[in-house]
Every structure is written in structure tokens, then in C-alpha cells.
Amino acid sequence: MKAPKVLADIVESVAAAVYVDCGFDLKALWVIFRGLLEPIITLDLLSQQPQPVTMLYELCQKDRKQVDIKHWRKGEKDITSVYVDGQFIVSVSSENKESAKLHAAKAALKKLAHKSTSKLDTEVEPNREFEGAKQKLNELCGRKKWPIPTYRIVKQVGPAHDKRFICSVQVAVAEGVLSVTGKEKSRVKDAENSAASAMVWGLQDSKLN
Image (cartoon, rainbow, N blue to C red):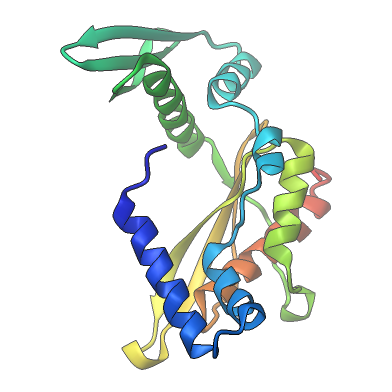
């Protein structure tokens, strides 16, 4: 993946500003700045994640569906299209064949998963929420060789000076994609942690962990 240079410049500038405000204290910088970088992806964690192309084949095999991945060259671009049981799913272009295949598989997984997303029937009481739920969920997914969980803001309420957020988390498992929504919180980070807590308890109750 080629990240734009401006993204690195922004992260560096923010880190530098926090470093100065912390009186050049590296430990204080890390405590504050770590939250902006979560989830922190290590090489070990990446190595545990299944490849998108493999996941696509495995997902379709479970449903006894046939996957066809077709490539062709158009000008300076490589194009990959994914078909499932002869039905067109998605087409992606890139600068090389392998990259096009990878992104096409990811896009196909996302599209297929969207059709099979199911909500976990779980309700997490405030006293069952716990700190570090996002890390706990990441570790659980790593052990199961599931993709890293994804979070999104599903609702924002309140005036600009007192915003509150509700977040959901999605986990792709062999049977499809599980989704659960957390409680309303004053910070996005806390709303994500609430959703992660709900997912951890939900997976435990459903015996999937």
C-alpha cells in the first residue's frame, strides 16, 4: 500500500506538537499519542491474518459456490474481475496484476459480507464494559485467524460542544460478518471500546470464541 506523503507529514506534525506541549517528555507523549494510532498493527499480527484471496475462496466453498478471478490488461492498468457462480461481483484496476487481484478479493469479500452481516443478540450493561476491550478483541481475532475488527460511527448526538457518539464493530467469521453496537459515549474511543466490550461478551455467549 502506498500511503500519501502528506499523511506521514500530518502524523509527524501532530506528534511533534504533542511532544512540545508535554515538555519534551517521551513517556507522556506515548500515553497521549498511542490512542491516535490504535489499533497498532505489528508484523506478527499481520502474519496471523488470512490472505483476502484465500478468504474469498474459503467463504464461497462453504456455500458450495465457485469463484472465478479473471485478469486482463488495459493500457497501463491491470484489471481483475471477480465472479461467483458466474455472477459478476466486482472489478478493480491497479498498476500491477498482484495488486489488482488483492484489492479485487478485498472488495468482493466486503460486498459478499455486507449481504451476510448479522447482528449479535447481546446487550452489554455498563458494569460489564471493561478497559482494553479493543485489544482483547484484536487478540481474540488473532487467535481465531479472523481479520482485524472494523469500527464505524453509527450515530452522533448533541450540540457541537457536547457531541456524543455511538459506534459499532464488525468481525468477519467463517459464517459471515457479525456486528454489534455499543453504548453512547462522549468520546469516539470510548464508544468503540463499548462496542468491543459488547462483541467480546457476545462472542463468549455465542460460543464462537
